[in-house]
Image (cartoon, rainbow, N blue to C red; front, side):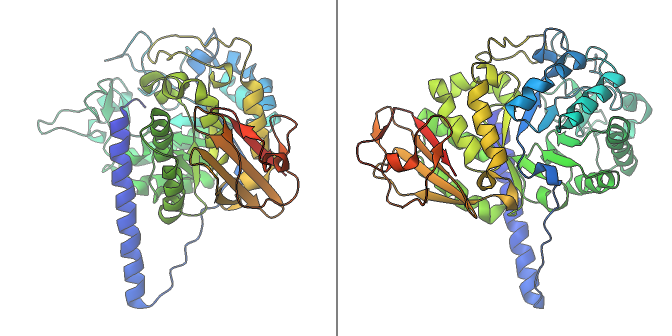
Length: 460
């Protein structure tokens, strides 16, 4: 959706605190009755174990701005290493109270139709089929919290919408004036919404959903959605939220907003890298061990409303990308990121991405293929053990991920100065750099340095 960083932070803090309290209450009740609580991990689709995800902005991805035109780009994205394609909303957009000339993707006029500006249902089916032929999966962006003001439900079922004190329908947030808030106390509306979810799995064989502002919709509804969809086929569910209870039954993955904001703050000089350690320690106490967290340096909201990676990270955007792609969770790439996108894309109007010569295609491909091929970087319970390695300099952040015989060592220099790269822990065997022909053993010698804002990733 579109909102401020303050809005995100407020919801994140509320959700995390609520989940902590719920966990404490459950533990207390279990202790009182002397029972052992067995938590059964949510079963993820097997194909998601080592996946990376790509967010597709259909409107801006090609000059045509269509599903058919985007489909032609699938082989390049396969070569990049992408396994999951997340399509921003493809549905017809409301006209009433529309923002800009084309409106927001998140103002949905019909949940079971394709925006005619983007193409047809047959185009959508063809995209999914082509993706499946390339062993890629497709998930759709879903907007369950609200609809456009000219959705048929507004006229035919006004009781399905939230009302203010005067009995008038209302937007969920004042700034979201182009949408009307849905009322999740209405059981009939819930069932219709679930039918719409099922439509795209049954008709187009999509593989799951990214669910917009998931924290603004009751968790028990998401649990029902997941159960219903899995009765058709195993699906992958991504929550635009950072809420631990979402991972119990409903969602495979959620946004790692907190970590994203930590990276932004480190880039501004407002935090030290010690906050990364604190985050990694706290993550294990808040989220289930099998929970996937989506790591990112940009997405459609960040790019359009908070700035490009160059605005937020400067020329060091690649340093933070290496961190996000290796430390934890599933990494995300947004349309244009591999083309060194250096502009804020218009959200309500046509603004085609300038792809140049894909200057960062190789950079991201190396990281994504490492993610796919090295179990130390896989997702959830399949991931390796994280360890911060002690260095001779606080500006150097070095860590390892280890899974059985597989290991990845990441070296990051957050300083503007050239730094000597030494660390105390011994690393067994030879680890090779994914970016050049260097070996990790060379970096344990006294005369080897990391460049200002430099990085290395070694693997075996």
